[in-house]
Amino acid sequence: MKHRELNGVHALLLLEGEKLIESIINFCAEKSITGATFNAIGAVKEIELGFYSLSTKEYAWKKAAAELEIDNITGNVAIVDGKPFVHAHGTVSDNETHAFGGHVKEAVIGASCEIFLTPLLGKIERAYDEKTGLKLMRLD
Ligand code: ZN
Image (cartoon, rainbow, N blue to C red):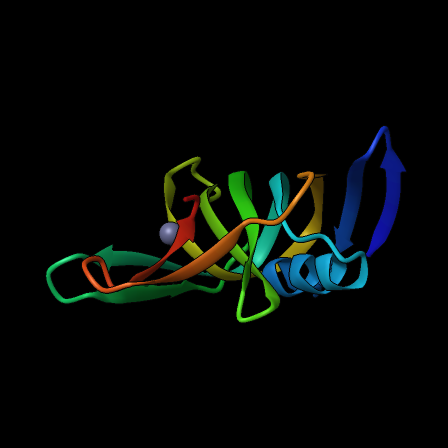
């Protein structure tokens, strides 16, 4: 991963084989970032996407192992159990420009991936919510 900070915003460049979510978690842990928002574009060679069902309270996961464009991945970083936690959703498209997307579990970078991550002043925490079965942001 290559990195440069500009006016408090972190430009990150991931290269082939690096993992998107893992890299962001490690970067935030290293920089003691406790809240952030980010977006990413680039390409993957593998991605795992999910759809969350409120009735079963489970994710249905789908893996795609192919070269795909990252049309957009948008996400945030919060703290869960004292550690950085990434929540990201994204859309990718194939060699016929057909797009699909969902909740991003992990993505292995293809050609490259450009991320702009903006740290927030302060800390955002998540906690388990019984009604949804999800770790929701605690904003109260
Ligand atoms: Zn999600």
